[in-house]
Image (cartoon, rainbow, N blue to C red):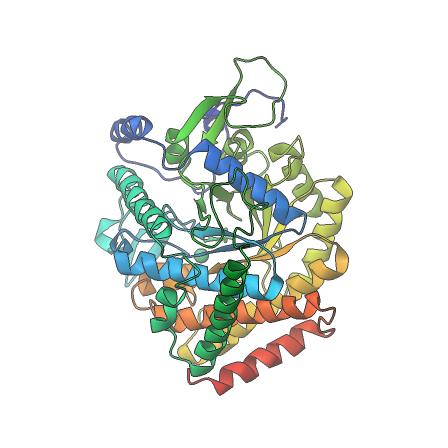
Length: 486
Ligand code: PEP
Ligand code: CO
């Protein structure tokens, strides 16, 4: 596939598609998609460009990227409580990071559209029955009797995304994100006294700093990070949405054209008639590890949209394949366009990450590197393995930060599954989807991770990053955790 071949929002249809969903009634699907095409965009091109600009800063190590949220959202979980707890956790997490790193944090939630799941097998056995695998709420039902793909679910996904996003926007513009009230975000979920104490320590330090800034009349800080002005980092924050761009029919239906130049995009060749295409279902979408074939439909769709995109990079990615993929999706080497989300698994990171980084550097592509410590470490576990699972997550995270710190000067950031999915293996998804929802425990584990990274960056900032990284940090964390009452 040459980057110069003509692209359109539907050109992916001529390519082979992985993880395809077959609808029994294609006419029904067309009708639903026509409806979605007429519905308003969920996010705007200028918000998308703003995120791309900010990811350009992350690429230059001037900001940190936090990508967090559920493995999968469900329609039933679209409630005030769930949404505000998730946003509160992400805000708390980012506050802890800002405290340690003294860098702005770009927040992207896996939220308001993270419904579709890739599966390793199209069918699964439940008892002695073989049924189609559960593919996420926008495709079929978790109930084994409701596994036939239903196009109406795409429409329901649109409306659940819109409702979620509306509530997120509402929370963020009505003081919920204000640094003057961080206690509103989360502490009800934190049972551990030592975590509470650490968080409160940060909040107190912050309140002092804010008061001091107000006294000397200098609390409009952060303006240089906020392109376009208007927002302060104190009262309101930027927050962006994302999901895996798996269901290409849906993504196509929400792809909208605007004239080039209207939202400050870089002009390419061509005249004033030229259109820029934005995926308006989310600010950021990513290509999963199972759908990143160079000549496949997903890569074809992704290469034509202007959004910043993510690409999952696992052990099966060859170095030259990674570079060819970057050439296809980012021929102009635009800053902020590509985020590589590494997910090797704690045992494999040493074998792959250095080679990937070296290949990308040699190609001249600039990317944002982030570590997803969840998807390479899925273990089906009896309850006794929980701690070890957490250990592998920490170990992949800390190993990534060492590698990226040693080998180049590009940003190290983190992506994380929080909420009900932290202990969820993909293969277990249908069986354990409900019973594994223990947001309290996961909430605390997430804050543990935030403190770990934050402390690491604080030490690094002071020129004292621990040399024997993984082990030392892991021990430090285990020590902290064992002192807690969780
Ligand atoms: C995910 O991020 O939810 C996911 C399925 O990841 P991966 O494509 O890396 O397996
Ligand atoms: Co997942």
